[in-house]
Length: 216
Image 1 (tube, rainbow, N blue to C red):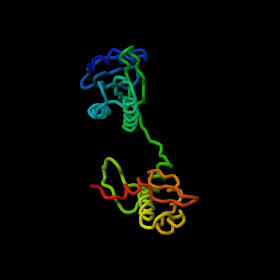
Image 2: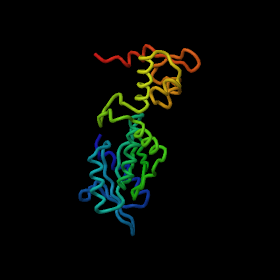
Image 3: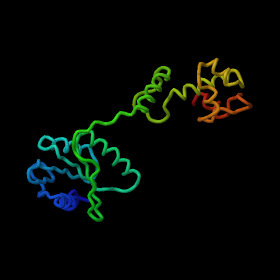
Image 4: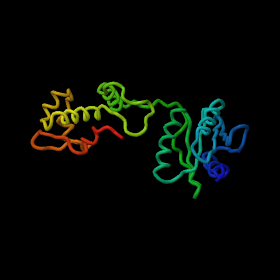
């Protein structure tokens, strides 16, 4: 598809709101004017891209009412991209439009203007808790795949104790390893490393032994 396919529905959408609309005015893909108001600028792109956001930021030099417009896609992947890019547009003070080409429906995902994201106290606490519980710095920044977390470190400590000492009660594992949540951790058995032998007594499973074995 071409960016020009987005123009007719965007033009019709703005004209329905009382704007006079013209295309390719200077560097702007679309410019719209309504009496007594500052101009509305719309940048058109066939997909989300860094270049689209760069253009939108550049247009903020001439107007506070700048929108980005992209075709509306389908499926989970587009839905996630739309959510992520809507947050980015809000953070940058840009508006975002999606255009459904099948019928020309234009939807406003966010309006341009100042934006102050709300802080999430639970997420902040989770980060601080993980930082405090993590022993040392076992990962590399930007690592993909399995990462060492404080929970995994605790599970490994419990597994190593059982490997060295045999079946044990959760209280004994806690006392020996310093893992406060040893009993709950082995009971929940998130990694499948532990087998329950009796009330409060755990041993290392075959999966747990494999996890402790050095790789090839």
